[in-house]
Image (cartoon, rainbow, N blue to C red; front, side, top):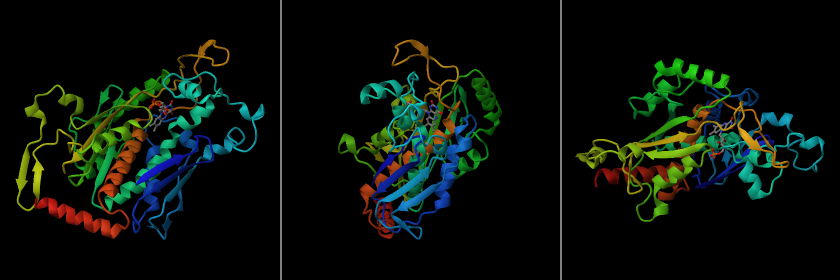
Length: 388
Ligand code: FMN
């Protein structure tokens, strides 16, 4: 399975194509739209979300709710394009009127400057439009399809917010996906400790007032993942490595941990390895999950646990120093409409890219042409493992 996305932040639409999902998968469009709505929510977001109301249109690969085995093509329209149609016009040549939103003062922490240098764009809007996290809307739509695929195979996952700026909100680090979902959906921060909501709201309000921004930490848990996805055979077959790449491939992610991750580095081996147990009828399992469900680049049947560190949003309403790319004068950086923190929507994006990588691993491991056959193969494989 593979996927590709196209589209600019203020262009007419975002497009995604998924190749390699089986025929016979039932898709629930409301479920995809619910994920898109979740990506638009969360405390601390800017005004763009008031304009957009993301909905997916399926334009290929699905008939009567069922996938055909052909590439699945998804579209999410950009409502804001109505205000940008001349500036983003792909047919008309450049004029003074349609280049009024030129970006010449690159924002530190964004792709603006290096993207311009690499691709030779003097109007840095040509970089900004694609490097913007608006693209993650279509990744969420693709991830929602993959999540439905996984759910129909009994695999569940959830991404939630563990920390915003300096405030931690996850002492327990729970593992039950349904329990996590019940708690996080009842607040606008997707946190599992609702008593921290007020403190974090205050922090976000104050940060916004100061013209500053915040980052945070996101945790994903995936359960009922069969042992043996990925491989120890070669570095590029390791599933934990692919997950790490997918997670850091999301805008603003600067660190990734599998299981106890960096804490494991400061612990003794006896505290970190997950001791092996055997239960008649259920097969092997572990007494703990410090390694986040991975040994040798393969899933070991325990819940997958991945954490990622999101840097603070780089666009500041109290802009930082920059240099005008034309005049070379020191100036304040460009200000584009922006969030104070995007940790809440980012947790949906991270959940989505993890779902995509797990769906890829499943279709790499089993015959991915037909859903019923795939279900049967996976059930047989789970049975075989119980009796290993
Ligand atoms: N950066 C901004 O400057 N303003 C935003 O409003 C903004 N919203 C984001 C929303 C989401 C869901 C995500 C995941 C990221 C967002 N970012 C935002 C972060 C930038 O897209 C990102 O920092 C930038 O593209 C540079 O990429 P890098 O941080 O991976 O180096």
